Image 1 (cartoon, rainbow, N blue to C red):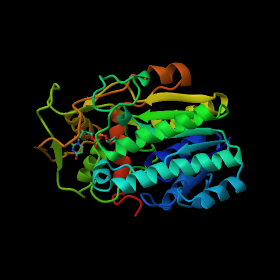
Image 2 (image 1 turned 60 degrees about the vertical axis):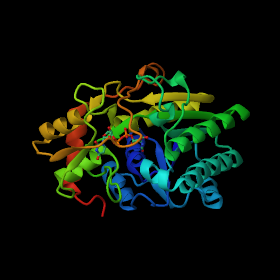
Image 3 (image 1 turned 90 degrees about the vertical axis):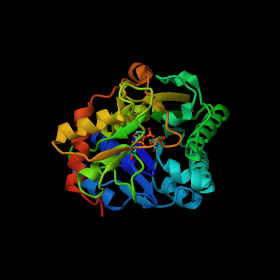
Image 4 (image 1 turned 45 degrees about the horizontal axis):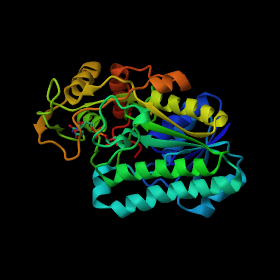
Length: 337
Ligand code: WQD
């Protein structure tokens, strides 16, 4: 199949491109490189031996997106074209609503005009909101989010679901990711945040490589065994393979279908730091600081539905996640730059 990856040069998009190519699909990447780097395309080619078709375009721009559909017979779209920094979304809510909602509307409009009926959406466990009990199950529905980033994911899911209700030909697959970490085993692609990392694993690996002095662990007084928050970390390659399964599913089913992509096994912040130290034989300097506003003590996935229906389950463990993160970071101390 020919798959359009909107926002495909980012962390999850690039790993998905590699797994789609490995599975024999044709990949078209559309990205404005707002939070990614054109070098990613060279790396995907280096890993797979195949260069994806590439469009430098803002996915909000309808004529730019239309051109892609005019020049390629797209079977399925995967929508990764979103801003994703929680803290920034609180400071700049309009930027987040404008970008994330507009990219979704543009893709759906152009798909309708072009007769493409399949879309897989990069959603997040954040849509379960603040009050859902862990483990999260798909049938819980969407809850109350604590920040504009979360609300954009919530709204984008709603828009996609409404579009599928109105068009019985449309297939929408909503993938709710838990906490992706790690990198392709080649170490040629990985997570490359701009500025100070917001997320735990890139911060840890930048401390390891000497770009940051020490990690601050946000809170040591949560109601968990060691007092630090617990999350469901999954290897980005497992997540990418989940997209391959989702694309194939979208092509044969109609309506809206929702899947959690997680391992079902949470780890605490301290367990992650210790696992990284042990897997890579490196010391990570850290201190405890106050809680970060909006963090939940713990949540993880019930991942049974993806296993039963998509035949997907996470195969890579915490040692792989820590080793592959470090392999990427030590070979690319300044990311793609
Ligand atoms: C994990 C744990 C922190 C940094 C967020 C979004 C979610 C998704 C992924 C993405 C928490 C702790 C972190 C640090 C720390 N969105 N931590 N020191 O918060 O579970 O999820 O990112 O695109 O929607 O909400 O992930 O990696 O930020 O944090 O102690 O410097 O690590 O408090 O307990 P989170 P995270």
